[in-house]
Length: 219
Image (cartoon, rainbow, N blue to C red; front, side):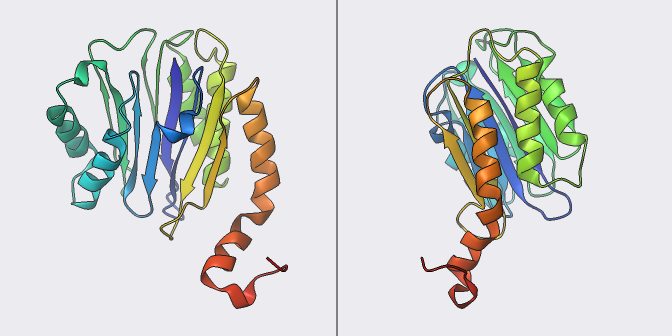
């Protein structure tokens, strides 16, 4: 009952994820990303421990596939897990445990992988990946959000979604974008509105952190 995607911008090296589900606060449990390292999705009977573990493996030099293989080997409950990884080079890998409920699957595009479980149909992941890949010139956060919107338009999951999140990392240890709708109706639409409001401030918040003398405003 979750659909999500991770992606990389080949121009900037930015990495990120977008995800939605019918449970509360999906952004706190499913997507993980680190600048210059990669991103990890861990869902279906979600084990959030696998996110940081996957990033640690990527930092150690593992590829996306090697990271997936190590994560699966390290957890005895992997039959309940659905995982996806993208590394800093844009390589992707995915794992679907034997207990992951249908419809489930993965969609692929350059620098992107989309996954889902308990979906309305098996077309949802590829619709997400196709939307991500449609305009490589757009900002990564915009491409990820378009992918999430396309997944919803393609049918989404079996029931209404309750939460959604958008995460992008760039050069700093803190995210460039970390927006969440933790609970409520139409979370993807609300996430779109939040992104449109946040976008003009995105670079300014980085400047306030790393070059405060250049910052605008009084706070």
